[in-house]
Length: 330
View 1 (tube, rainbow, N blue to C red):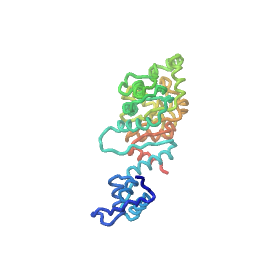
View 2 (tube, rainbow, N blue to C red; view 1 turned 60 degrees about the vertical axis):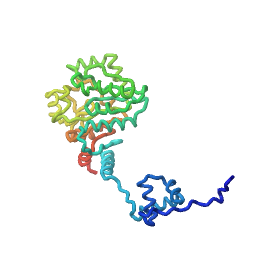
View 3 (tube, rainbow, N blue to C red; view 1 turned 30 degrees about the vertical axis):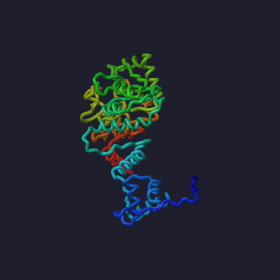
View 4 (cartoon, one colour; view 1 turned 45 degrees about the horizontal axis):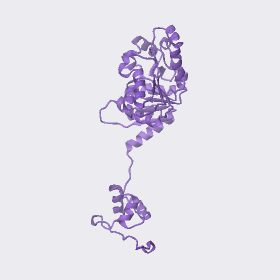
């Protein structure tokens, strides 16, 4: 038997359950927000049109039955991200929410940075990688991928004194997670004198490496202060005498191989003549320069780094972002 749908009767409207009284907007809101039904499913259950369900949900909001609130901590993070982006000349800023887990901030930042980088990766990327605990944490948190067209390259020479988060380990770890091409710099990070650096830079394998670095589409690095318990001394990259020379010249922070003062001026000493690192002009030409750093000890270094215009993208934690925003008032 063929049924003429034009003569079919509309579904009969169903009254709300007794506990909802005759309050149809309340019942509709309950089905939508609490039981998770879609509007067309609610329409079928209540014997109403979808447009009527929409109007009932709107009435529930207008009458105060439903109050929609936004998590204020998320609002603050959004405000901080926008403030730092606009005031510090960044292209993007990502702020990690505060947490009571007790996990080290560099581990939590590494996890966030991994998720962000995964969204930004392209198969033809050439990514220059510096070193540090946060960069290493990010490399461990990356989801496995298959990007054989991407190249992961070391931006500074090697150092056996920083095994747990050395430049070569950070680079190779990221490449392994992404199944990408790994290019380590087969030269020490710091040599004994300027003549040795000059000779090394003329070696074909080293020269080719720095030619590759000029093709970088992204760089990954952290920032560290020159005072307190700094990784620069703990890792053996710099000794007390070298640090003192930079401090006497006004140095406050270090990022991707370079020291800068509070106004963002790059400070050079005799150490730079012995340090094998991506030349500053090449580094600043990279389109996406991603700094992953946070914690109270790094606030001064990050503030100075903004003045130096070293990073285009910052990934930091909420407390650090709040402190930095105070130092860069609108």
